[in-house]
Amino acid sequence: MRYRIEYMHSTIQLGKSDLRVPPLGVGTWQWGEDLIWGFGNSYDRKAAEAAFSASVAAGLTFFDTAEVYGRGGSERVLGACVKTTDKPVIIASKFAPLPQRIGRRTVTHALDESLKRLGVACIDLYQVHWPFPVISIEMLMDILADAVDAGKIRYIGVSNYSAVDMRRAHAALAKRGLPLACNQVRYSLLNRTPEVNGVYAACRELDIALIAYSPLAQGMLTGRYSPDNPPPGPRRFMPNFNRAALEHMEPVTQALRQIGAAHGDKTPAQVALNWLARQPGVLPIPGAKNAKHAEANAGAIGWDMTDDEADLLSSVSLSWRK
Image (cartoon, rainbow, N blue to C red; front, top):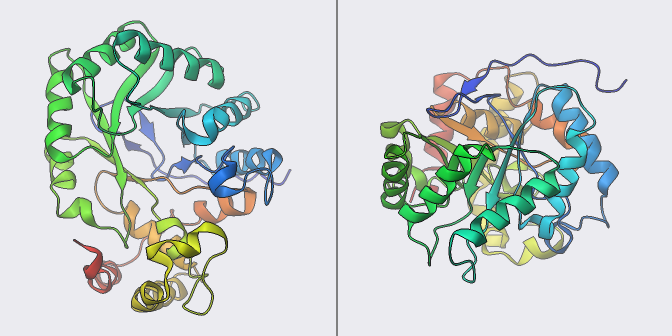
């Protein structure tokens, strides 16, 4: 009964595909990932299942996973969760272009294994996790186009592709009469590189969705951490979380709190996600370890900051636009 109230959000079209998705998705890297996120210790499968239920109840029905997350664990957890709801859910997963995967059979085998773990006959959006060093982009797109024809996937996307490589993938799929639906890249107030390296501009030009992963900069934009309160676990040793970095982002945190207070006490994380979701053609996919996280994520949309507030955030985060 906890999730009976459903938030109503408008949907957006994912690039030139016919997939209509909420303006905020759900990243599921944390589901099943024990080495980095501590799955099975600080939270467990029941918590992930609760995060799924809360997300669906809030109208967030786009879930992004990958075969490498938790060594297949994330796909298995998501697949089990999907069976618990009768509401339409959109599943996105990713193919890992490992060096030993050479040739058509390795790609189709990886796809078939993902289908098994997810327990579905077709994946709505199948993305290449990073640029492929062995098989050419053109050949890989052709293999995936065959999978579309076979009914195993609906749409094709890429991840971590440069503007040049994305254009190659787009051109290769166009020869098969298919759109490139998305490019999933790291994008947040604290990582605005897509705005200057040509990726975002190419996405807008070609009508390709930009799916933004790590939209909260792995927790830096939650407002929970400060120079005297770094995050626990391995993250405290990452360059982004050293004392100098945390001191440098204080103006961003202050602006997030100021804007949040003006909109019904929205949290810094909700404000940061709202700023990202208002960028045309951008779909943020924050993670959620539990129902509380999922419900908090949902509070990031359904309201609008002013243009002046958005400009303030853009201004105080300019040093991350590089």
